[in-house]
Image 1 (tube, protein in one colour):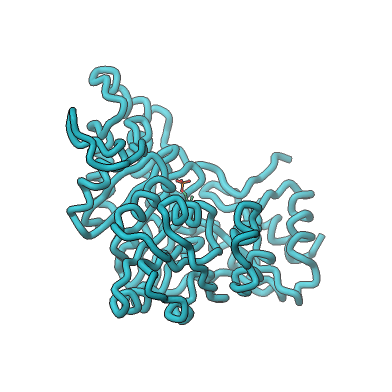
Image 2 (cartoon, rainbow, N blue to C red):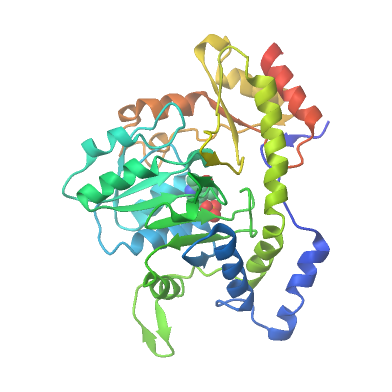
Length: 366
Ligand SMILES: *Cc1c(COP(=O)(O)O)cnc(C)c1O
């Protein structure tokens, strides 16, 4: 049997991509905000109802730019239950991460624990919409207003989602999305910021192009983080299929829920009725009463050629580059979830027979 991995990149038909990139051979514009990037930006804006959009070579550089655009340095309240990019970006932008624990229900930042962490150095709250579960944006915004803080979301997992009928592109001052190959929507690699303050458009354009603002003018210590035309062309093609893609993912999600919902000790992630999900991941949390550890179940699945992922494990504060600086016991819920979670294979054309087989293994423990 072939190995089934946690994800498989979605690709628009080959012919469509070839058609889309054809005129690059006429224009010879390969990068530097060319016509493909402009077209992609416009299409995205309409699709997700964003006020302002800036494209980047990847999500990480987009997030780093977002943090550099805050204009201040200091402490940023976030969680360790995320991909390393979030914390790297905080540090690379000259800020200090302050770790807040997550909620056991949806793995996002616990909004009730944020205020205790605010000091006179705090400049922002950086929430992560984990697995596409959207943060409590209302409460977080209220706290931010009270203490005059910025709100930035790492929405890498949450493209084309909605909560209370509001697009994830409009939930904070700045929202970052990743279009990496492994995400629900990809432009090979790619990233995007959506934001309300129009003045930031110039900042981002300069910043992702070395700070260059004219033939003889460099106004900012930027870097090179521009999306190129081939990435944008892939994004344009894949965007045509996003609704279809999500519909297929919902079928996979529904099947998993149906088959796994009554297994003692397996905790599932249910999507709240006020959220429109993109079904990016299918996490299960293995509880003690299941009778087998997370690692044992993980290995059993692997023996059967099903390759899930312990995502996010180890917790960021336990990684080699951070464990001597931070203490993961300060965020016990994040630590516990990290040690017990598996994200199961999840992609749009995952066959029902494989889902059933994965569920059978989880149920029978053999
Ligand atoms: C993927 C991801 C990123 C980084 O995005 P890239 O496009 O891979 O640079 C950041 N944060 C989270 C939560 C992610 O999952």
